[in-house]
Length: 281
Image 1 (tube, rainbow, N blue to C red):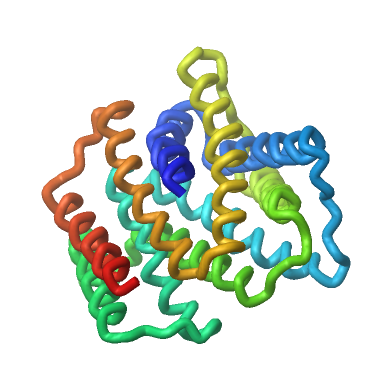
Image 2: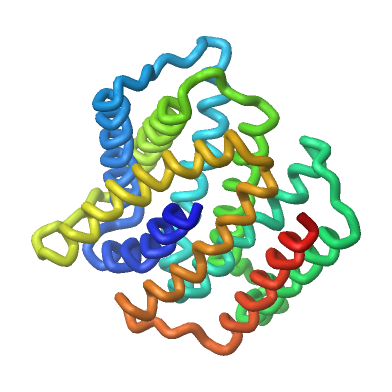
């Protein structure tokens, strides 16, 4: 989980760099297609069977739409709506939603300490949502907040869904087909919603695109789905709270995007919530 957190965390500023030379749907279609190809080649290189029982294809499709497609789509549009650091922190409130969904659908308990951790985490979410309150008070829709919550909630639902409806196949196969399905969704949306644009003529853009395909969309997804298969939904999700730390660090190093005091306060509350839940364990 630590390695996945580093790869996904630094992917946030990498995507921001690429949005300067690529349109959002094209970026997601190209990135997920490249990630899908990498995963299929990895399966071939390791002689991993890609077969999935016919009765489980619906499960793979639903999990892919939630875990990969919706998350990636919402996350990229969130970056167009707010600073990268804040988007990364808000998106990874995912463990809070996963704990709630695991309680509803899997019967994983919420005792007093977990309830307290959820309350603290929601307080952190409230702090980070402060800039959007004037828009909501005026009756507007804070699209940036909608996008980041859409990303975190869809990923949490997908994680819990796979725990409730496991797929009888190799973890690499499950991962690869989820990314393939998500790439197909983004290709269709790209063709319908925008004029494709992807400029990789500069070394910086090319290096960012290569990183985006191989590491976050390939290696990190393999690590994540294998972890999610073997651990409880809540335990696996808690590890994702390392991601915004590396996301913020990467934003500072690669973009010069320093977090505000509000961002630091929100991140501290959310991480405190996770630490409290870890003490429970």
